[in-house]
Length: 185
Picture 1: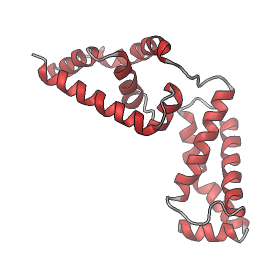
Picture 2: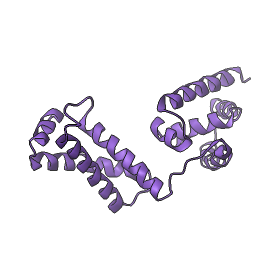
Picture 3: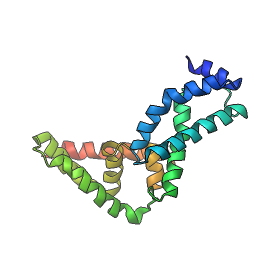
Picture 4: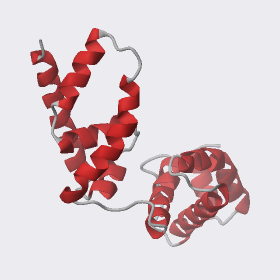
């Protein structure tokens, strides 16, 4: 069943389409919430709320056509609900520049495990270059590449203005890392 067919079916209020949508993306959403340490029963509640919000957006005319897949739209709703849940549980905390060091120390501990195994010369050179970066660059790159945070999550965590600012900062950090790496002897 195509996303447009499901959308049209949901517009008519046919619960069979809602059930199909619910079952089709349930496992993927529950898997997504595992990354945040959310218990299955709480993740199911969040998923059901996201399904209801999507259904309400259709009923109120807020969603009339798709610019993305229904899954993307649903997960976008769900992701913000996950962040709200974590914020309410005080698991996702906002930090300012004064807290970069404490966050970086926690991430350093986790990140250093990667370098405990035998490293080849290129990996050692990369580690040296990485260690020469500033704390903000280290933090963003570790969150993005090691802990698999996306730009929107990093905006939430580090209180940047937008995901474009995060992407720009990540690009500058990678460029700087590359320059240091290429200049290592």
